[in-house]
Amino acid sequence: VHPLHGEAAAAALVARGWSVTTHVVPAGEASKSWAELERGLARARAAGLERGDLVVALGGGVVGDLAGLVAALHLRGVAFVQCPTSLLAQVDASIGGKVAIDVPDGKNLLGTFHFPHAVLIDPHSLRTLPSRQLSAGLAEMLKHGALFDAAHFAELESSAAAVRAHDAQLTARLVRRSVALKAACVAADPFEVAPQGRNLLNLGHTLGHALETCSGFDLLHGEAVGLGLRAAARLSAALGLAAPTVEAAIVRALAAAGLPTDLDARLERHAAGELTGAMGRDKKRAGGTVTYIALEALGRPTTRALEPQRILDLLRPRAAPC
Ligand SMILES: NC(=O)c1ccc[n+]([C@@H]2O[C@H](COP(=O)([O-])OP(=O)(O)OC[C@H]3O[C@@H](n4cnc5c(N)ncnc54)[C@H](O)[C@@H]3O)[C@@H](O)[C@H]2O)c1
Image 1 (spheres, helix red, strand yellow):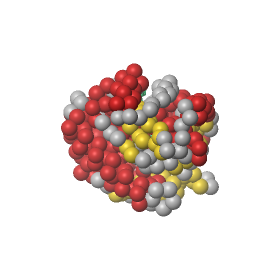
Image 2: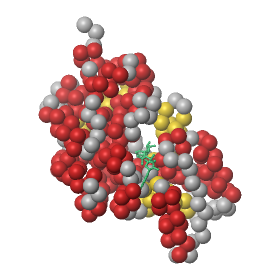
Image 3: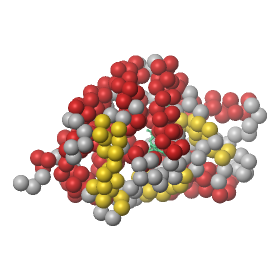
Image 4: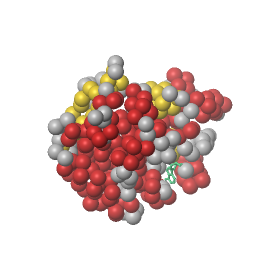
């Protein structure tokens, strides 16, 4: 992002009288690490960043999560502004104040809540985003629709081709709707304590995170979430909560968004123990169960406490012991 947009952003701030120090981190999930956190904090100290100053996170969700944690820790917290440049960060990672790094046991396990002063979204920054990353962002938007707004879900399916063709006006409208849906959910339960509040945003993430981890991060986060959405629909039907047509609708929307739909092949690729182990390490676990976000229909979420093995059994009944 830095070579594409960094200098223009810094120059715009300087032109308005700000004094700017730039700190660049390598692209990729590996930068959400202790080492990069330490490097960022050292840079903030070396730059003499004071309480009244602020951190601007210009980049995808990796930069937002890392820069936000630096801002939360430096001098016990300085302000920060999110300038998300990937679609996934615009509709999801930059909204809601969760900041974190990864540790060897799992993703996002070390972090805090540090709400941004502002989130500035420029849809034109998406012009340089690789199309695979654009599709990954659409997965989180489909999640918002599946959770809270079936009409948004349907519009995303019919508009996915235009978004992928960089129709900035249409994309801006859909991004605004997704942001509004996520922000309303976060505002009602900012610290994720309600039984059916912010945790609903975890739809698609229990299995999604497990598939992402077990793939050695060969699947993008959004791609894994897309497969997790399909899994949630299938599991909901298996529990008698939702009609089987919900899974079919999700598969159609994932395909339109250019996302993988090969859930069965992915489930078969990994040993059951690998996936249940990864699900068992989920942050949302309580005792032996995890809070699984299910769907009664598109736009009607619900939760169930389930053991990881039961989740797998419901998702691949053919693999269950005879
Ligand atoms: N804090 C939260 O609530 C929250 C929510 C969802 C996801 N996340 C986190 O966000 C991360 C994923 O975010 P992501 O999908 O943005 O990944 P990312 O930050 O790795 O960005 C994806 C890639 O796109 C590049 N990129 C970003 N914007 C670009 C642009 N405009 N043009 C060209 N290239 C661009 C990045 O350099 C990177 O290589 C994960 O670490 C995930 O855990 C956090």
